[in-house]
Length: 233
Image (cartoon, rainbow, N blue to C red; front, side):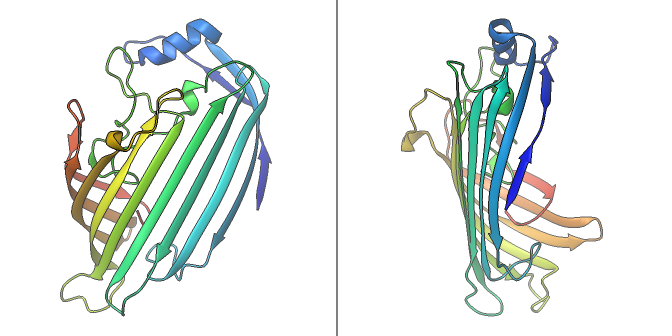
């Protein structure tokens, strides 16, 4: 269990690269926002490894409430992962994540608290953080509602035996983010499939993926080859 509180001050400064949605929010509610968010979270992890798991599950529920200040909002995030080993070599793995936010006291959800989707960690094959709503300039601004579903089949790298430090995987991803008043439609979900390589390198877990979007729309920003340093999914 985790309980926390903080004091935040967010300043929006006009500039050539700032999304128009940020300026619109600042013009309505001020270029400086203060908030006192309270947070609570619960998690349980019974995976056999945090960086190269082959069995077990991970569950997490987190909530954040802005109770005092200019930014009044509620934000929650739910995540569930499960690893089901078929044998010593092959492991199907599943990940699901839901995010939801709502503005309070008659204000919209703060644009600087949005969820993002696209790329490693969400829907691979799309440029990082570019899915979902865009402002009038075409800048990706994320959204207060998010859904991500991932499925993988993990196997040792050919010739590496059962070595966990070097593995290959095939995957399928589905997801997107949505605006506060935007309906959640199945037709708006993006999807991709692909293959990847995970390596426990000296600088940390490294994942490389080659993805092919199989469900996309005009204007989506595609990035078929991606890599990151991080944990599973």
